[in-house]
Image (tube, rainbow, N blue to C red; front, side, top):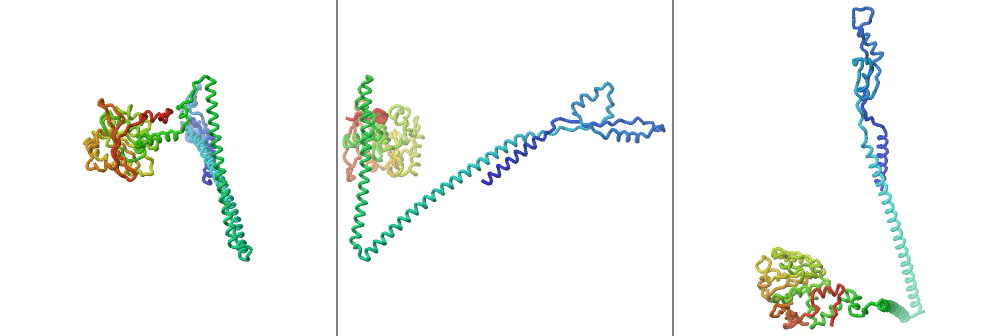
Length: 482
């Protein structure tokens, strides 16, 4: 703060000094100094009636030439010979007096210096205010702590005195040890009952509040209904209106219950688990749409971020199967049959795995068109082994799509048939002869409570298992579950 005050004083000093200097008027015009120095006419040295020429010239110089007159040079140049009989030019001695440069820069120094002074002083005042405010706050805290310590000290001393008196009473026989223990027990019981009663009072208050809120909502609903009737509006007592008042968590709970109730909850296992999912089947079997549905469910129900979609046919699928994933802003790889970019999805996943842990928010990555990835780039054969390896540690939920379950159709991976069998869910979707989806298939990979793999399960997809329906469920068009 002292430095800021010094800057302020220095700025004011420079500003005042500059204005003082600026006030000394500079001379922006040229002058000329003129002396009248006539020449002697005593040039005849043989004439004894006149003084010698040099002495005569000295006499004239001492009388006239010692005086100088300053005039504007411009006036002198224009008007000196305007007389009808001007004096000869040789009788004058002149010297130019150039103009003095104006100190206009000092005009800028003054406001700049004053501005610096003002800012320095303002900063000084602000720092002082902050300092004293903090000092006051520290003093308040100190007083509060001192008061707290004092109360605690008083309580401690009071309790110590009571304990000492109790010991004295026991010592002189006024009260027995059993009586003292009984007293302490009754005090503890009283504290416990007080605590229990207080909790009940809080619970009662919460219940009364919840009841009041429910009554208000009921009354509001009735009032809205009566208002609609009076205005001739259509009766809105239907499932859509009931669902429109549900919170996001309530909508999610509805969907979770529907998943758990559908065919022993196999869909919920796929949504909840980080176990990689391989969806395979013929063209037109609804593979990409199923992957999109599972990804949306993971996003809405377990708060998973849609991290990446690797698909060389993304341009064809972005308005269909991936339409409702795009608003969730995944990173897209392979657009325009670019296998080199498809490989970047694998390289980025490797980099993610170096820093992610189970504590991180779950993410979802989708790998489409693995059927044709074999041999297209060097790391194609490494995708499935990476996906299977420790998905739990990096909390990444991977969904892979292929036309077949062979290693050649899974990027050309080698010697991992057993890990694929034991560490993935495999969903084989079916089509009819017209290559249309049947919304049915066979699921492999489920295990029992002892970890033993169960037999193949014949499964089907519910009618509401569509990307647009799942998206609409959380955007104003709740699903009517049967």
